[in-house]
Length: 191
Image (cartoon, rainbow, N blue to C red):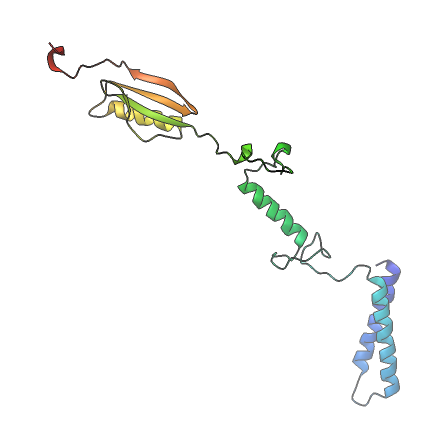
């Protein structure tokens, strides 16, 4: 709305307001027709000055945008952006790579993303005199597994040796505490 339209609309509305103050129960019909003409003139000026359509959403960014009834602000565009943000939180926050796109023909063996991801664990083991045996629950955190083994070594009945094994597709011994010695279970060494 430009300044001229604003001035003309203000003048027309003030004139209608003066008509409203002058109305009484014995106002003649000629005066009522004059009020109606002034009201029409004010409505026409208002129609000329309004350039955009009616507001359909409660969104300040997209007041005339498409409507989504389930959105709190009724704005489909903003709700689509919020949904995409929520989906990316669950998907790890990364957009799909080009090689992860849907192929034209599905493979009978599956795709790389369908395979389970390799898991890594740290296995606390103790030497029982003949072999290494698992002495606690496999841990997902290396520091936690080392703290567990440190507590076992300080315990009332520590083993001769402990070791921490990294399990990730293959096994790798990370650290060994103590020296494992082969112990014969027969007394006197089978003499």
